[in-house]
Image 1: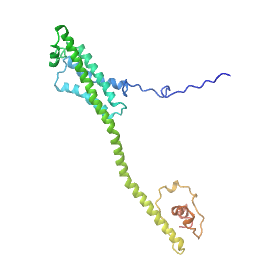
Image 2: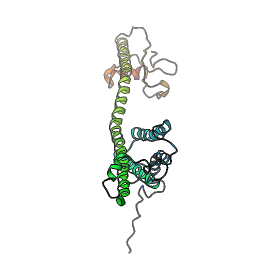
Image 3: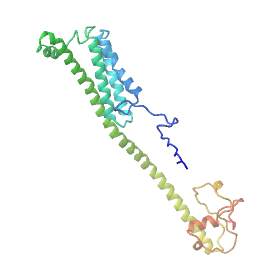
Length: 270
């Protein structure tokens, strides 16, 4: 007899009903979100190097600060398993965009090729003329890396802090809501207990004194009468009362002996 082949187990990732969420490498972000957050940084660099917008103007500040505001919003409000790693990778990608745009447009508009920072000029002066431009380009590449990765590190720390603080804020809010709900629950429980005690005293007094006039027992019920079975707890009418000792508790005796029937009266006319 041949061996029976065991059926292969279909995992969650292999089942077409559960599509696999593709995340960017070393992050918990989907690929589309990483691309969007990275491309938000491109317009300011591109327009500045082409000379379309001028530094230190309102339009320049709008293009420069808006992407950072979006990054901060994602860092604070988005739940992430790797908050610091997410923005460290974003910072590295931002650095790559700075390097590619600056080096491609080196001699265009107001790019670094035309307006070198003084530190880059001083660094290039240490080398011979054939190596000077290469040294300056290498220096600006290091500046781009520092700006991009530094931005990612700062916002990544903010995202990590937000992940640490967010659950505690949620727990404190839930605790405040439960604390505000406790008084109403306690007062409702006290009312039901007082009603049960009063009902028991009245029933006991009538059981001990048959000449006592009939009285209707009023009890606050947690379950509406329409939801209770009609004849589940009824007792046959009799002039003698066995008392609460035959039941598990006084409340059971009250419920069984004095539940109103269809005519609005108990089994003994109470």
